[in-house]
Image (cartoon, rainbow, N blue to C red; front, top):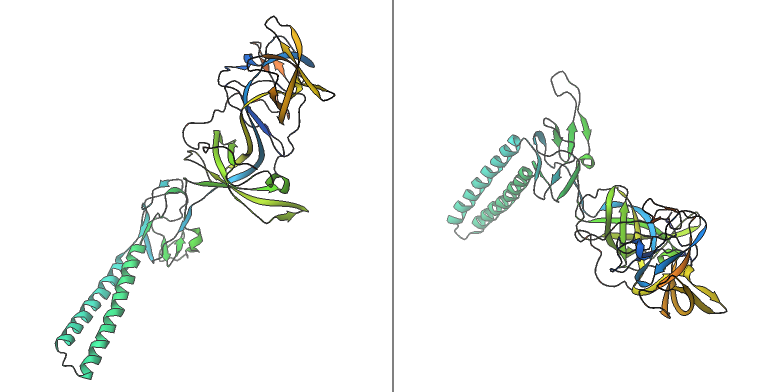
Length: 416
């Protein structure tokens, strides 16, 4: 079941390490705040030392922020490209070059079978074709224009055509004696061993093939070689009707996993128009596509996906609980250089998560007094606040967006 609210990972640079006790809830969304590039640490936002308990007045710096809202859900990675291979010819496996767990390129030979019988069949049908072609040539040379001569030539031509198809089939059987990777990727299953007897798309593995008997176990082609592509990945998730209403195809996605160090990114590639109902609750299938080349991903890995449906950049925003509203008038406490506070009226804009946009009344760099609810936080040995954000999870201190593979797609977010 998807989570309905989440604070997504924030950039390491300039982020206020403050647990906000008040502020608007996110509903089905979540909010992440990325601080301005000029801020270098929590000192720009949280000042003052000492053990804290209950509510305590702190100061924060007014700055331009990037605010996001997102829907968070979970799913598992699935490769876009997979391939199942099995021998189509009959024979005994003579060579195996690849085992399960190996990585192959398209065209790599995985295994091959004994071609002695296949070669004999090919040579035999080639000889028949050569004889038929010689017969046809003789008939054409002796053609006297009679009906009998024409009939003989037509029969010889038909014989040649049939044998040409037989030669093509025999050559294809020779090709089928070599199992070749048709895609690049990770080999997750490879059951063949030298000495196994295969027959027409199935394999006989194990068992004693000596005169003392002991039948081999026949396995179907579905248990043959499986290759999973590692270049493209998708994640299938289910969202509620209210969550689907927030997102759109092309929305950016941030992925995290306990089995992967860091973040990787993607987009919403498909949203089902028809819901499925389980236990009276309607959900919609949504497909997420991982973008870029991301090393270290594996089929079946559980991931958490944060679908960003709203992003506001360069917004002058402050913690909502720094604002006091009485009779429709909003005010904040501005702290001057000497540490004295003075009340000032401000004009507010949109509230996203626990932050509110300020459209008038404040300028970047000013200091505000904020009452911080510290019941879930503590002060570290170096005097900085070690806070937790709502929900109990620690506020992330890292997680810069990588500059390499799996980059967040460019461009602004589509409107919803």
